Length: 291
Length: 250
Image 1 (cartoon, helix red, strand yellow):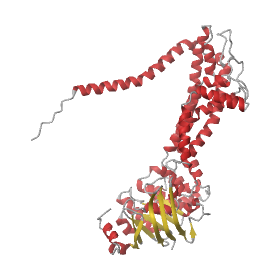
Image 2: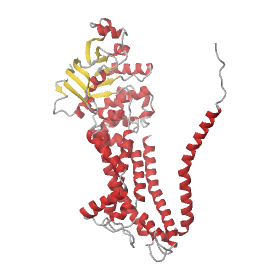
Image 3: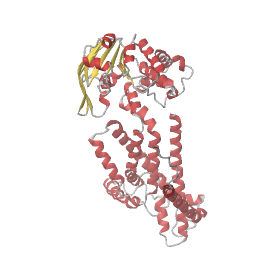
Image 4: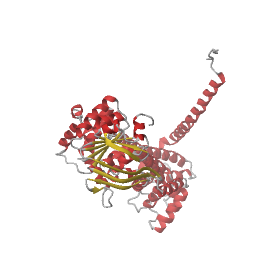
């Protein structure tokens, strides 16, 4: 005997489903709302101060209206540039070694463990490492290169992890095709694997730059100076950076300097956007070429 | 004999998949290797151009003579072996970032043996040999992946031919293709046998009968029987071969 089929909707089940979707949607909206609120507040407070002279002028501890962040902006560009030059080649090489040459070995497992541990180390600890190693032991002093080396160590785990993920997305059948044609490991990696992994590697570079550009704590420790009138003129020059400058302004007792801090945050965000925009453009260009 | 294999054993980690195989493969013929999944036939094939050892944890032992050279001798560069012994894989794997033309030239470009003036001739010769020229001659600049599955597999054959190998190994080259595309590849293999020594691993017993002069039956890492294809299929000497051909296990 057959029962008639019951197609009546289960009301409580439907409600639970709907409630769950809303909880998830709220979760997605929270970060958006926070970012919007932050941007709105900072823009309202600081947009009036942003001008060409604000971006190029040296700071002033007396007159907030005349103070600029020229040296800090230049310092940040130097820092990020040097950090990228140091961290990307080393990080990508490490990823290539681990994925293409030494997959599944004991050494890879140990390095993997070390990398995930490094990623969790507080940035202030990197600062102290940089102070001991680069500033003192290698006698680089409180220079922009010492700061960049410290930041490079800090972002290295991000670069390595992202590059490994990117290399893993390249199908083994393509490696086999190249090796089967009599190509060496290096020829295969250089001409088949790396071009296909490049977009993912650039994504890692974007994450690394974003992380490095906002770091303040390790720079305080390795000796970014609080007040300087000029941007760096070489890798061994003293320097400061945008987050340092913003921090200086927020801790100044005069209220007008808070406006400068807000304007500084806007410049920092704009710099980040420009740098990441460049990396994204590069990524899209390489992606378009391979399909 | 073109290839002489003696006492070949192969492992993945601790797991032995090829358990001491002696097999001779004649020049300019097609030799088919059949057997159930996991019988070691693909691994055996990959030992013939030293591809097996590329898998982490994989190793092998034994002697493989190409003409009179032991490809496992200590002074042999496996990279050069693979230029001598080409390979076509189960699933067509053209390089997605390259055009049809560049796919054919990939072996030469990757190994920096590319000569701009020779290139058009190499492309045409290889594609003609792979019976693909007429279908693609007007769109050599299009991506290799824009072709149909059967065309992609013939492109991979052209790519293997372009580096001038002596021997071509084919690892179930038609298992992802429909019967029409399969028939075209089989025709092509019969053409190629005039100039090359071919070894094909196949799941398809009809295919072995259609293309191969000789067929070897593998079971659990061992060579059970090797004979003329016609004899092996009509009068197998070993009971296990007879059972497999009759479909009593698979």
